[in-house]
Amino acid sequence: MTDYDILGICKDDSLQDLKTAYKRKALLLHPDKNHHPKANEKFIQLDDAYKRLLLNAINHTTNDTQHKSKKTKPESKTESKTESKSYDLFVTHEDLWNGKKIGARLPNGDIVDIDIPPGSHENSKFASNNMNFQIKVCNSTTFKREGFTLHYREKISIFDCLRSDLELKIPSLDRTKKIWIFDVPPIFSLQKGILIIKNYGLPNKRKIRSHLIVHFEIQYPKTTLSQKHCDYLNEIARDLM
Image 1 (tube, helix red, strand yellow):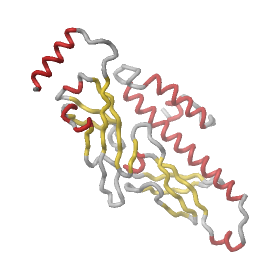
Image 2: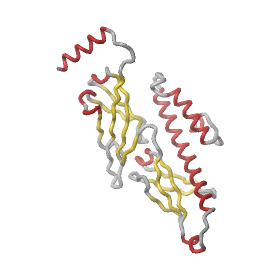
Image 3: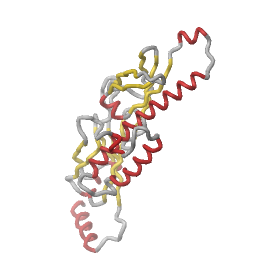
Image 4: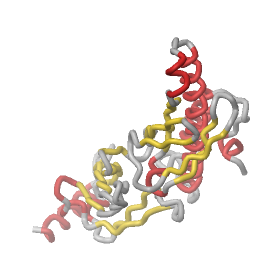
């Protein structure tokens, strides 16, 4: 099954068609809305396919636009001989984590292979065939980036906050694994509800990984608690004192 099949679109569909198809399917498959056992796996598959197709579409559109804009600029004979063309190359967080060889399609139809090594960062520059490419990082639907540090938000019920056997599952940036699984201490023991997971951020130039910071958002009951639930919470509170 191709990425196009997963999104339910054709190769000739527009960028807007791609975004619309993703939003429609994401609403159906998101684990918060769909409680099927395989919903999370299907959502991750959908998200990965969308990122790849979006990245491909953005790179092609950007290079075409930049090529057209350069045609409108008058340039001297000297400049036309010595000036290198420059293009933005859009990549994902996964590309920065794993490294990737990207085939950048130029306006004339040629494809130039660019090796993006792990540890590349925003505005990293690469040269190939008298052309310069500058890295631009696409926004992620899963993580927020601050330098090489990644931030992830996880919703958790007030009852799960008291558990000592809580497992956290996060979509993995490592292409050899679909999901990262971490043991989480009781949330109430974490300072400001934040868990710092070392060496799971993006790599820097020396290939040293930064941290992944998980922000837990406590979800409170939407209805009034029953007396049974209140008694249960009071009993736990007394044990913790």
